[in-house]
Length: 201
Image (cartoon, rainbow, N blue to C red):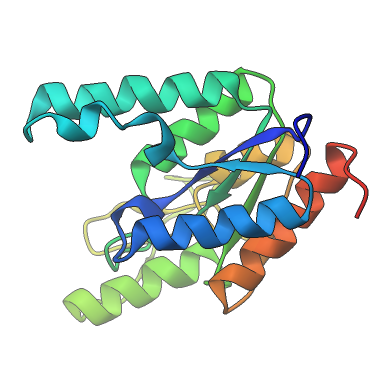
């Protein structure tokens, strides 16, 4: 890595996982191999981490993370399901939208290659013992034909996550790398981004 290495924001539910700091160091090392400067959310939170838990501390984290995204050239986002549900971490989804609004390139990665509808189906079956049910096409003519037991549409057919998430990554020129091993999935996403940022691999 050199002084002109583009800074890349590394985000996802990783910040909540055990050994998060060590995990981010591993991802940063992969970035460095590819000529990128990996930046973890923790990198902007030193002062906020000294504050007591509470609303103001969380908002300080929010401001610090936004500042990091403003300064980074691009982002790599983990879109794994969060807290055993079908959906990803909502904060990461917001960050993906913010980065697209800034016009910055993004790539995604996940260890879970099931399509979103399969994730919803498996969640409802495993957590509630309830199957998905057909939903009248008149209720949802274009975005899905199944509903959960609450009557909520199962949408984003053919995608790994909510269409806005994967769609925004795609609109930035990126895609989602899939591998059962987290670091392998991340490495592929980082490799794709490095190429797009003009790094020699």
